[in-house]
Length: 128
Image (cartoon, rainbow, N blue to C red; front, side, top):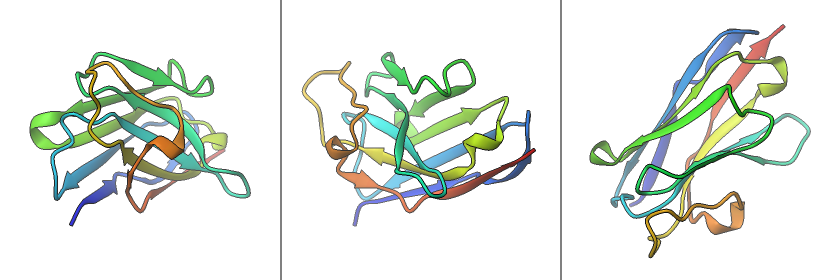
């Protein structure tokens, strides 16, 4: 059974930092792009960050550029999201996701529909 399990969420004051982890099991995702999405209260789920399987290509939502960093450790089948300078508007449920195997090492996606595997999510709350 394929599972993605997020951890590291919590309550933090504005300006603080959190590091989210997403541990995968059931299959290796070394040839999948990995992404983070978030679902703010009362809004649609939105793209946050993505990284290709060769670890070199990344994309970020404009709202988090310069503050968030996505990284991955293929040997551990784990992807991370380092979040710095957090703002109240970053409050959301954060979910990691993985695509199916991709033919090109630098492929990634910012589109939810292209991700086949999803975690349950972890709550991040930023207080002002």
